[in-house]
Length: 432
Image 1: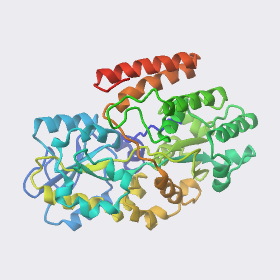
Image 2 (image 1 turned 120 degrees about the vertical axis):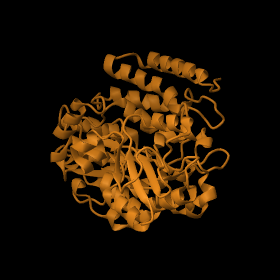
Image 3 (image 1 turned 90 degrees about the vertical axis):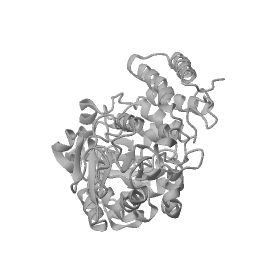
Image 4 (image 1 turned 45 degrees about the horizontal axis):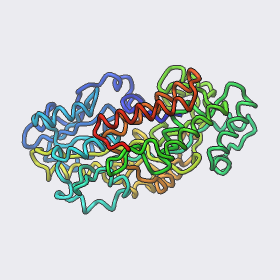
C-alpha cells in the first residue's frame, strides 16, 4: 500500500507507449530551441516524461500563434537538472515544472524563481485549492509556482474479490464499514479467512506514510524543530505494527514484478492512492479493467503528489511566460490533462467538467471524480521541510526490518528515532 508514484513510467506508458520509457532530453511541440529559451519568439517548457498531452500543446499553439512553443522532456533526476541549471544561470527554460516532493526544497531557493505575484498570480489564486497554492508560497510571501494537480488519496479495490468473500463491496457500503483503521484491519482478517493468501495491505510503510499525514503534522515543524519522536508519529508507527501483527500485510515492495503480479492476480485487491494511481494499476493489471472501484479509505484523505509550473529568474520574458503558464493551467486544460494522465485538477472549476466528472471505464463506469473532489476538501495542509524526506527514511527502513526479518518493533522504533535525530542535527534541524 506504499503510495509510490511511477511518474516517470506509469501514466507516460499508457499515453505514449514504449517510447515514453526511453525519452531523455527530448522535445515535443512546435519548433524552437532545445537547450533553453532560444530566440525572442521561442518559449520552452521543461517537464518530466509524463509531459503534457498533444491536445494541450495544440491549444497553446492556437492561443499564442506569435510564438514557437516547445515542451522539453527531461529524463533522469529532474530536481538535480533544475538545480544545476539554476546555479549556472545559463540554458534556462522559460517555464519549468517543479515536482510536489521538491517544492519544499525550492521554497528555500527563492532567488531561482520569478515572484509570480508580480506577474498576476494574485488574480488567479482563487481558481485553485488554497492549501495546494500555499505549498508554493515562500516564507517571504513570494509565489513560486501555480499548481498543476493535486493528489488526494482514496482506496482502490476489486469489487469482485470483495463480493466473492462476502464483504461489503459497493463503494458507499464499503466506505461506511471502514471509517477507522481497526475496522479496515478487521475487514482484512475476514478477507484472508475467506480467501487465503489475499491481503488488503501492500506493506506497512504505506500505512505509516498515510496515517502520520492524517495528523496534519510531519517530522519537522515550521520553526525548524524535529518532531519525529512525538505522539503523532508514534501513533502511526504503532498502527503500522498493528497491521503487520493482524496478518493482513502482504509485505511486498512497491514497483516490483511480484507486487504487480499480486495486483493482477487479485492477491492484492486493495490499494491506497491518488487519482494518478489509476495509471499504475492499468499498467500492472490491464486485464482487470472494470473490476475496480474507489471509495474513501480509513480516516481522512491526505495529499500524495501534485506538482507546479514556475518561471525561472532570468527568463527572457517573464510576463509572456506567465501568460502561457496561466493558460496551460486553466481549468479547461487541467480537465484535458486528467483524461491524459489521471492528474486530478488543482483548479476547482475543472472538477465539474465532463472530462473529469465522467464515468471511468477501468472503474466499472464509476464517477471517480466525485470521490477525489470530496477527498480534496478534507486534506489537512502538511508543512514539509526541505529535509523531511531524509529524516523520514530511517522510519521506513526500520519498518521494513520489522516486516521482513521480525525485528522487535520497540527496538526498531528506538533505532529509527536515533538515526532520524542524527540526520536532523547534521542537516541543521533543531533537536530537543
